[in-house]
Amino acid sequence: MTSVEPPVLAIERTRGVGRNPGIPLDQRWVEGVRVNRSAVERRTATLPTRRTVKKEWQAAWLLRAISCLDLTTLSGDDTPGTVRRLCAKALRPLRADMAGEFGSLGLNLRVGAVCVYHNMVPVAVEALEGTDLPIAAVSTGFPAGQIPVDVKLAEIRASVRAGASEIDIVISRGLALTNQWPALYEEVRAFRQACGSAHMKTIIAAGELGTLQRVGMTSLVCMMAGADFIKTSTGKETVNATLPIGLVMTRAIRDYWHHTGYRVGFKPAGGIRSAKQALDWELLMKEELGREWLDASLFRIGASGLLSDIERQLSYYLYGRYAANQYFPVP
Figure 1: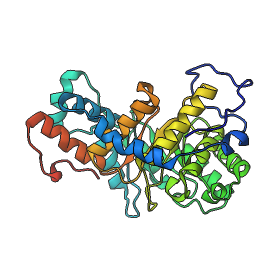
Figure 2: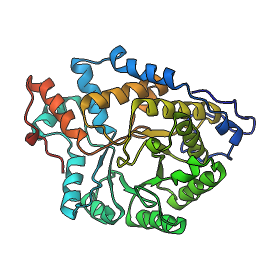
Figure 3: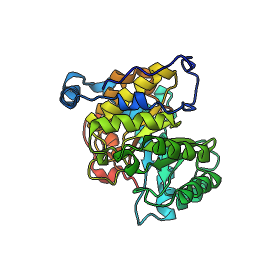
């Protein structure tokens, strides 16, 4: 992805200054985004074949993936019991015997956060009392976002009051699809203000934006509005997290960082179910953004069933055989 050089003379360029506060909307920068789809697809098609990790290195990368996992339950049949089991698994993501085997490494392994619907936030808060594990709540009319703005803002504030420390918001896709960049900027800016101290992960629903160019443009607008993370999908779209979408979004993050000095996190979500896929996303982060982004503060994987397959792969590493799925339950 390439873009027109934005004006940066008025922007503080100090590296590593902390949370992204956002910058004024620069439509010239946004409208100058260009994406070569063929080049993006070639780049991502070769990534899994050019970069591989084996044996103890693979185990280390998979343990890292667990630490960056947003363990999620967003189903219509969620119950308090489901959320409590999810929280217990989040604090102890590996089976006891496996955790013991890796214990010599001095690991206090847990996932990056638990992600639930707003009405389940109090249940998660109670289940995680005494820990500092983040609780993420999906908000703003998730997944479609087709509710009034005042209702969206009220939902964000209610989730923060209930104890959510992270809010996963969804944008109004129609604003991006019709090039209403100032309106999209103001919407996301209002969401950021409503979040207060809670970190905001902005879901752009990339699979519904039509083109990779629009994915890049929307990513930039959301970062300018103050997004702490940009996230690929709700997991409910027909197309969710794909490596081409991820490449465009991570390069938008890199572009924004180079021109402002602010690091924005990235969260692929939807359809990531295998340990191999998790490794591919980690490799993409390492190659495009560097080691700093291989940390839960800047990288999350949104998934529900992924942890089971990672456990199976780690079991094979430790014991030389795969265990059946029932030995690695996830609520």
